[in-house]
Every structure is written in structure tokens, then in C-alpha cells.
Image (cartoon, rainbow, N blue to C red; front, side):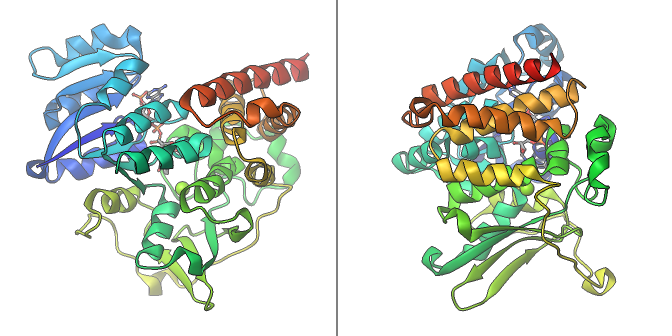
Length: 390
Ligand code: NDP
Ligand code: MG
């Protein structure tokens, strides 16, 4: 039996992972499930899967979790440290599906014990790609990408020489506002930004898809994980979201990965790797689909893509600064304190401030320094927003 844990089990990726594991419970020994606010789901799944421990990120929710688990053998724990501690429990396969930089410490802890880390939490790579890869290497651990584009690239690269890769093309749906007049973006509401044309995902990544901050993060994720040069990474709008990514080789071949927009494919691929096994996802009917469309993204509509280039050019701690400023600006948009189009401006202002502070950007890539950068970028983002409001 394989020992598995799911971090962020109550979220969109987490629930798809629970779904796959639940279909073959005899194959898995479930160690830890974690969540934050959704105690009902966390306790229900922990009991159904026979997890050893269920952890909520919220210390104030411990009593509720304990009550929900009463009478079962599942241990209850709470707080960010308890989540990271759960990642130190011996385990073979760990799903990293917490949203935000909160996923970084538990991901590193899982790598330190040599587990295979199925990585949906792109923030880990954006903030600390070099640290993640180094930790995996030192501990003989494996990172398998779960972000659908990166899983597609990983699959297209299987058996290939990375030196023969000319370019990697990420597809983007274009998000909720791809056909809106540019001038209307400033008044886009939270509800409008929270609906995705093709994928059913958590609220934060859905809004990030509308702004293409998600694609910006994914470009950096490609750079960090596959170690290609920034100018080898392209983004193309593909409204159908059926091609997840393409890899171009030096002989002119372009390998595309197609599949339905269902995260259970990428999750299942990582769960079964290096084998393939049957998965309960829809099969594409190409004749019915008829045609696939592509167009170049417009930087005026998606300024986040330009910011991703600046982050890659600067390197170091800039990814952590970018992610933290973005998370903070997104919080402010969700709380209706700034407009949709303000998010990219706030992030740009924070990055500009970091550019004048090379000590921070060039600090060694340790969890401590990433955490410091993260805190500073959040503080500066708040200052930028306060100044704009005042
Ligand atoms: P959701 O918002 O649906 O779920 C997030 C999970 O993290 C929930 O289990 C939530 O708990 C938990 N959580 C929230 N805050 C904290 C915290 N501070 N500490 C610990 N746990 C926390 O997110 P998604 O599933 O959409 O995304 C998860 C990750 O996967 C993100 O990094 C995202 O970018 C990435 N991803 C997601 C895709 C998707 O299809 N959804 C596709 C590709 C990548 P609770 O719900 O109990 O509050
Ligand atoms: Mg993706």
C-alpha cells in the first residue's frame, strides 16, 4: 500500500485528489489530510479515507475539528506548524494543493523526507524554485508537476533531451475578460472575475486567470522547473483550453498535449507515474470539437505577463516578492478595496521598489529569506495601496 497525504485536501485540486484516491482505497494508506476553514469536508474525508491525522491551518478551528472527529481514530491538529509537522510523517506520495505561499514549508518538509511531491502549489516554485529543486536533489525526492500545463510539458518531455528543446508554449484560455473592451476592465466586479470560461477551480486562481497573473506565475514555474531560458517560453491564447501546452524541438517538431479541462488527468498522471492507468475523465471527440483557435495575448490587457518577464530577468528573491505582492493585491480586490486593473499596478510598484534594494533580492535562497521577502512585499503592497487610496 502506498502512503499518501493531501495538503489542501478541502480545495478544488484537493477534492479531485480525494476523488481519485477514494476510487481505489485498497491501494492507499492515507496519512494526513489538511484544510483550513472547511472543517466539515476535512473531517468527513479524513474519516472516510481512514487518515491518521487531519490538520486545519486555523488554530481557532481545533475544537470544531476535534468535535467532528470524535469517536474516530483520526488525530486532530491545528496551525501552520502542525501542517508542516504533518508533512514530516513518513509518506510515499504527497499532494501539495494548499493555495498561496503557505504551501511552501510543508512542500519542503515532504521533500526533506524523500517523498514524491505532486506539486499543484505553483507558488512554491515561483517563490523558491531553486530551493525546491535543491531540496529534492539532496533528499533523493521527486517533484511531479500537477499544474495542467506543466504536467503536459512533463509528459511531452518524457524520453526527450531537454537540450533539444527550442521553446515551450503555454496555452491560456484568456480568462473571464478575454473578449471585454479594454476600457471596461477597470469596473469588472468580483463575481465577474470569479467565473472561468472552461475550468472549475478555486476562487483565487480563477481571478488570477482573468488577470493572467496565473499564466505569469506559470511562465515563471516553467523557468524554475524545466530550467529553460525565459525567451524560450511563450504564451498563446487558446480559448478552448484543450491543448494544455506544447513543446517545440530543434527539428521543428511541436508536441502538443490535449485533454479535457479536468484536473483529475494531471493529478492521476502524477499519482500513477511512471505508469499510466485508466482515469475517469471524458475522452475528446475531435470531430465534434471541429476546430481549435489561437491568438497572441495583448500585453495591454494582460500586464501581468510583462511583470513575469521582469521577475525572470532579475531572478533571486524577485519571484517571492512578485507572489506576495500579487497575493496581497488579490486579497484587496476580493475585499473590494481596489479595482481589477489596480492589481497589476500595485505589483509593479512593489517590484520597482525591490529593484532599488539589491540586498533583499540577492539574499541567499533559504526558507527564512523567502519568508522575509514575502513579509516585506506584503507590507510594501499595503503601503502602495494605502497611498493610492489616500
Ligand atoms: P482552493 O482555494 O480551492 O483550495 C485551497 C486549499 O488550501 C483548501 O484546502 C484550503 O482550505 C487550504 N488553505 C487555504 N488557506 C490556507 C492556509 N493559509 N494554510 C493552509 N491551507 C490553506 O485552491 P485550488 O485547489 O484551486 O488551488 C490549490 C493550488 O493548486 C494553488 O496553488 C493553485 O494555484 C494550484 N492549481 C489549482 C488548479 C485548479 O484547478 N484548481 C490548477 C492548477 C494549479 P479550506 O478550503 O478548508 O479553507
Ligand atoms: Mg495551469
